[in-house]
Length: 247
Image (cartoon, rainbow, N blue to C red; front, side, top):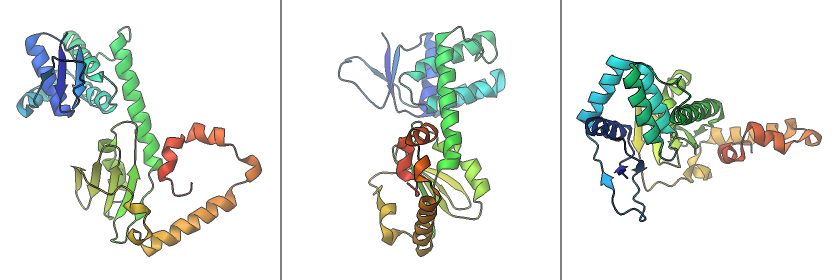
């Protein structure tokens, strides 16, 4: 059994694909930055950006850009061992010389398409669910904890929506920040107070007034006799409520 550990980056995954192609062997299990003690023999693959570029350029120029996009979206799902399914999808696309996503007779293709669907659906949910708060320093801040690593899929929408504002989208679960001030940056952070935005002194006067007004409106507009928490959870799962101002 071939077990691989890598740094969890997409470039790292492309490095594994490069090695698997040359070795003509697909790993059985791939872990991200985690070495379970039950396994004694694990090969650690160090990210090689040259190898990663070779693979991405080959897919783009010789196969189909959609293949690379599908691989990336499935990777963002962070599903356990999805990397192996991605490699198998790549190999099949390589074999038939086109995008292999329609070959749903393969279980790994079904798993890959399921992962992609969940990532895309969650991305679309958060385009409407993200709540920005104006901080005392004038920056607009939106915290969230998505199930999948979708933060890199959000810039285009919010740059178009708020082109003249300074804003931050913060994936608290993964310690990732998407920061925009005329240019966009994705930053890994640590030692950060994730609850700072809950402290009144960190919010602008306008934000505190707006939140109070919005909560009052939300409460007055609701009809207690028609309250249906089951239906509410169906359209907006409880795991998303934490960062909604009105709840």
